[in-house]
Image (tube, rainbow, N blue to C red; front, side, top):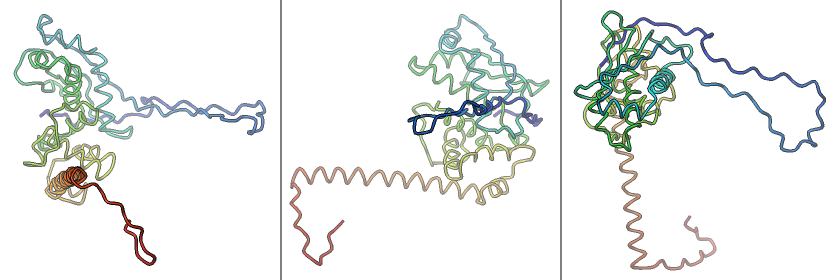
Length: 300
């Protein structure tokens, strides 16, 4: 879990890319509409929000290491970090949001245990470092190497830009938000699955899928609201969840588990009925249905 500094910077409207102005009407007289079949009107499209990016850096401990070489072969580091910044901030904030004032992000490739972690520099937590294991990179199957790198970096970049209630939020919630952003970006690995066992704040994809359920149940922007509520105040479980949804988190977790069981139950009978129907057809072909007599109700 990464400790995030609580200083904020409100984004001024001037830093956002503006929508192109609508063209003014032409003074040239237009023919009658009937003489212009299939005329399509071109309208300006709203551009996606572009937030100010911090300075991004890459630090490679040893270029001769296999993991370092394979990382550089798989991705363009500059584009990777820039896209991760924009993807994370768009997922968690709007143009009216208070975004943590992260000023730089340095990706460090080096040999170490585990996969990756994010930290702030001791002298200034607005400068973040993402440490990524070259040993782990080297061990990723070639067919999934690029996608896994994108997913890991997207997860870790969340820790550079999320709120954490002055360090009092559950670590599982912090990690769950990071994996929810990774999930919504389309970078979930094939072994992830929705699992209702254990506690809601077990973290990572376990909590990420729970947050995804809340996003679908309460509407788009739900996880943004959760992140925003972690800004500027300490975390108290009861008031936190009741204030957001009117339910305790234990009730929400129970509802999520029930939804998983219902989906499993709904899928199973369909398969059984199909198998039974196929077996019945093989043994006894369907008989012709007699026409209904006058006054009788035909089965629908």
